[in-house]
Image (cartoon, rainbow, N blue to C red; front, top):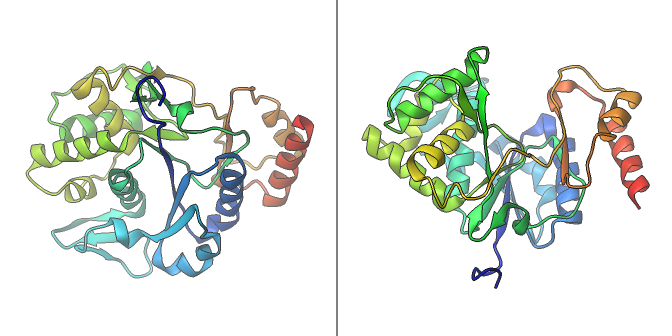
Length: 295
C-alpha cells in the first residue's frame, strides 16, 4: 500500500505500423529493459501483424487495430482510411482512426495509468506507475494559456472537444494538453466516452470518426479540466519528462549529441520524430553512447 492506495498498475499503449517497425522494436527493447512488469500493448494494422508478432512476449501483446474499431468501420482499399457504414461521409482518415484506437484501448484497460508512447520514443531510465500516479490521482499534463490565436490547429481541436463534450464555445488563450508520453487514467477515459455518447446520442466512435480535425489529448484534457475538476486535476504538471525533436530534418551525429546533451536526470525518455528521417543506425549509435556515458 502507498498512501492508502494499492501499488498502482501501469500499461503502455503503442500504435505503430510497418514503416516504423525498427523504431518500435527499439522502443519495445527499452521498455523491457527499464520498466519491469509493465503490460505493453502494440497495436498495428492487420497487414503488419506478422512482422510485429516477433515482439510478442510475456509482457508484450501485439494487437490488430480491428480489435478496437466497430465492425461498421470498413477499410478503404489502397488508402490509409476507413468508412463507417453508420455514417459513410466523410471517410475516416487514418490519423482519426488511430486516435479512436487509442481511446478504445485505454478504456479497456484495468490499469491505473495508461501511458501512450509512440514508436519514435525510446525509454532511457527506469520508471514505474508511481512516476505518473500520486495519492490515487494520475498525472495530468497541462500548460495554461499556451494555445493562442497563432495556433490554428490547436484552436480547431479545442472547438471540436468542447462541441463533443456539450460545452459552450470558448475563446483563446486555451490550455495545451498535447504531450508525449501521455498519461491517462482509464477510468476517466471510460467516463469521457460515456459523456460524448450522452451529448451526441450516438456511439462515440461514430462521433469521433465524423470529425475532420480532432485531438484525443485535447478532448481528454478539456474533459478533466472543465467537467471533472478535483480530484482528477490534483496532480498537474507541465513537464513531459521527455526531450523532443519534431523538425522534419534529419539529425546528424553532432545534432544527435547536442540533442541528447539536453537530457536531464529526471527525464525518462527521448523522442526523435520518425518524420525527421534521422537514420536509424545513427540514432542507435547516439543512444548507445549516451547510455554508456551514464554507466
